[in-house]
Amino acid sequence: MFTLKNVLIILLLVTIVWIIYLFIKTLKTSATTGSFQKKLAERKKRLENQKTREQKAQEKAELKAEIAKKRAEWKAEDEEKEAIVKAELEELIAKKKEIEPEWKRICKEYKANPEDENLAQQYQEINKKYDRLKQKIRIAKDRLSVGRKLENWSKRGGKLRRQIFINRQYYYLIAPYTFLFIIFTVVPVIMSLALSFTYFNLLEFPTFIGWDNYMNLFVNDDVWMVAIKNTAILAVVTGPLSYIMAFVFAWLINELRPLLRSFMTLVFYAPSISGNVYLVWKLIFSSDMYGYANALLIQTNIIKEPITWLQDADYIVWILIIVQLWMSLGVSFLSFIAGLQSVNKELYEAGAIDGIKNRWQELWHITLPQMKSQLLFGAVMQITSALSIADVSVNLAGFPSVEYAGHTIITHLMDYSSIRMEMGYASAIATILFLIMILANIGVRKILRRVGA
Image 1 (tube, rainbow, N blue to C red):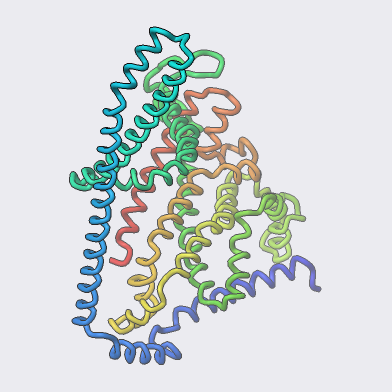
Image 2 (image 1 turned 60 degrees about the horizontal axis):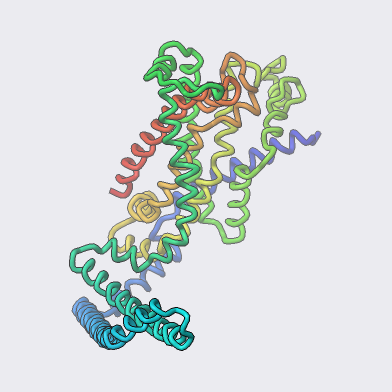
């Protein structure tokens, strides 16, 4: 009899078999078989008909000469403009010197006899004329000073300052974001580090207590040690495993046709944007016999009585691992798909000419080195996701969970910051988590540098 549960099980098995078939097919596909061999032959013909290296070198030299000539023309234009500005400046200064005695005389007479209307009119006219000359002189000096600053910076090797000065309008555009980033990210991190050395409960002024918060964490706080153990298990299992799974699925789906590839990309990315996904997992791991997991195991005679999945300390961590793996594939998967799509296809043809014979060599020597930025982004996102697990634990296992089996560093931080209001102690927890993330990111960067070596 076909029930909804049986249909879901059949669909799951079909999906697993299809993924295994696609994986084997992808591995068996050689870089030098089928239509690729024809493309390779055409590529060789194109390479034979291309220009020689000497011709390319000559074209490169001609291009450099043309660039140098253009730069010389630009320099000559700048010098000509500077000469014009200098001439204008000298002329303006001469005019200023010419009218300055008269301006001083009229000003002196006007101060002595301010009631004379004729003298007041002369004073206003000469004053406007004198102010206009001063303004024009200031503008001309500014034009000269900008050109000299750029030239001096270039001569002194101040390339960075020169580029900043030239592109200052773009820095003005990002200034608001930079300001907000400093206010809402950098400043809180620094304040958290400072508060970690204090006793602060939001009611009293912070009191400096030195390293007491850190000593209490590692000496007197047994729940903290449980949180570290649970976070370590979740991070070590879900971090690398979800990272590898995201890349493997992206690699396989990238081989599909465009329409099917777009559909599968949406399917894999959907869990990361699902809002009420915890309700589904609660239904799957419900403690009664109507939960999907218990119903499946009872129908297959694996168990006799329902298992209290989310109330048993032996199962909570493993359920959290399953849910976190399912939810953490989206962002990294999307990044890897974008990286695979951006790899230049001609590199595979050139690699085949240089001796690459199978997909593993293609992957290691061509694909991975060409998408290091996407690999790094995915690694950072997975580290952050693995070390900041909290919502999964709170929504599935409760807060606090049974015997603190689902307690993580973040839930421990939530306990002391939102419930107990011990902000100094919570800041110490946040500082340690911040340092762990930094060390993990440094380690991942060093590992990714070896990709393609």
